[in-house]
Every structure is written in C-alpha cells, then in structure tokens.
Length: 409
Image (cartoon, rainbow, N blue to C red):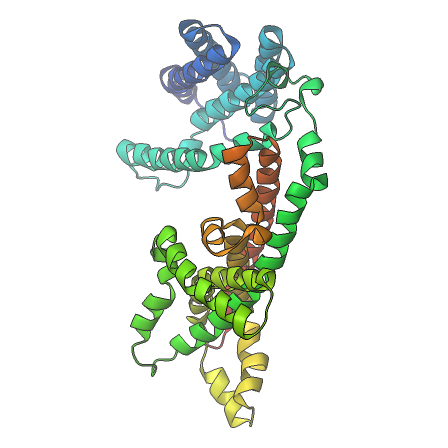
C-alpha cells in the first residue's frame, strides 16, 4: 500500500529537517571535526567549522534527496575523499569512518529511529533520557575497551617503541612488522614462561572445577547447616585484596613446600609447581562455585529423587542425571578459573620461584627491567585468548538457559 503525503505533511517534514536533523547533525559534525582537525593539524576552530558545515550539508542532502543505502555510501565517499586530500591514506580512512558516523546520525534523526525502544506516548524528556542512557553506556564501554584496542596496532610496530610512529599513523606498510610476534614465539625468555603457564593453568583449573562443583552441589542442599557462612568463606578470595591473600599463601605454602621436600623427598622445582597450582586453584574455586550455583538454581531436584527410586547410586545419579544439566555452568566456571590462573601475577610472585615464572610474571619483569615491545605482542595474544574463552562462556550461558527452560520444573 502506497502512502501519499499531503502538502502539509511534506512541509512539516521539511521543517523538521531544518529545525531538528540539520542542526543536531551539524553539532555532531563539529565534535567530529574538532577531533579530526586536531589529528590533521588544522586547529580546533578550523576543524569545528569544517565539521559543522559538512555535517549540515550531508544532513540536508541525505534526509531530503537520497535514500538510506545510497546516502550512507555518499557520506562515506565524500568524507573519505576529503580526508584523503588532507591526510593521505590514513586521512582517507579516518574520513570514511567519520562519514559513516555522520550518515548514520543524519538518518537516525530524520527517520525517527531515535524513538525506537520507547513507547509512542513518551515525552521529549523521556526520549532524551533513553538516548542519553545509551550514550552513557557506550562511553563507559569505550572507556573500558579503549586501552585494550590501543595495544593491538602497537604490537605490529616495526620500531622498538611503545608509541605510534609517523609511518604507522600514515598507514605506511614499512611502519608495521611481525618481529615482536616472532620474538615471542622464538625467544626462550618468553617460551619458558608460556610453557609454565600452560602447565600450571590446566592443573589449577581441574582442581578448581572438581572442588568447586562439589562445594556448589553441597551448598545447594537446604539441609546443610551454616551454608551461607560457608559460602562466604569459600568465595572470600574474590573479595579479599589479592596482596593479602598472596601474603597468607606465602607463609602457608612455604611451610608446606619444606615439608614436601624434607618428608616426601620431592624436588624443589616440583614442590614449587605444586604450590603455585594449589594457590591458583584456591583463586579459581570461587568462580566455579558461583557459576555452578547459578546453574543449580533452575535444576529440578525431583530428577535426582526419581533416579534414586529407580535404583541409581548417588554417583550414577550425579554423572547421568545432574552433571549433563549443570555442565554448561561447570565449563563456564572452569574457563573463568583458567583465565584467572593464566593471567595471575601477584600470587605467583609470592609463592613461586624463578623456575615457575609464568607469562604474566615475565611481562611484569619486562616492564620493570627491560622495556620490550614484545610485551605488546604477548598482550595481544592474551586478549585474543580471553575473547575466545569469553565467547565460549557466553554460548554456554545461553545453552544453560535453554536447558533450564526445558526442565520439567
């Protein structure tokens, strides 16, 4: 069905473009122009005026004359060409990004998409607060993610610097290199700590998952006395400052290490690994308890009673009935425990020795004693691993929700 606009409707739409879409897009363009002008060395005022003019012109052209898909490409092309003229390849890329933002803003305002998510009867103040809240959330997300994003391009620096070189800013291929990654995967100073981390973290994760799962199942039973107090004690490593936990672990595990070496005849190196693994397991257990306990909230206890009535032993009931349903929570807790062990540095400094130097310890030493850009490559690899693990955790969380929805409860 085709909607025919009257002359009054067209006049109202045109008036809304001039009084609402164009001024706001111009203001947004001015902000982007200040940032772009500073990067291009044009000055604050020049960037502000240029951004406002370009934003206003694009807003009018896109809102009145161009359809959405075509208009966005036009905005990207126009701003990209301007950036290419002023700043070369890097300027062209930055201009294309700014053009995409301006095109999105123009259509977001002109099509009324800014009212999406609020009731039709919402007042102007309610709409403003709704979008301000989303902006605040976006700024918080940017504040948290910006430091991580910064180190990724720096890890490809061809020079031994922790800053963006002129070649990198100009997107010159000569300014980028994989030599820091090559150093990470070929240098024994990095390979040995990596090997230690890959030895310690899996064993600590296995212990954390085993003990944490059993503790969560036990504490989920209503007849267990003082379960709230026990739960508070078990998750205290998450609450107590890590330096305090590390100090306590140092005194405890140092005595345990001496006992293992003198009584059991274990070598000093092996006892060091055992101490670090147990210390990291203690840090990972709270994450397993919390995730498994959250999964057990939707578990139907009548299933275990039915299995017992059918003659199943408690062990069989656990592995055949309960474990498949809480497995997503167990795996999620295990991944969190693995990340905690793999990234931990404070406890291993107190409990471990030079033979147990882990990857984060080597990074900490590199920052203090020899500032090497290889640290940036290592950090990028760790970020990639964390992203993969967290993605798996999110997938498991969704699967756990679906399983709880299918439960007879």
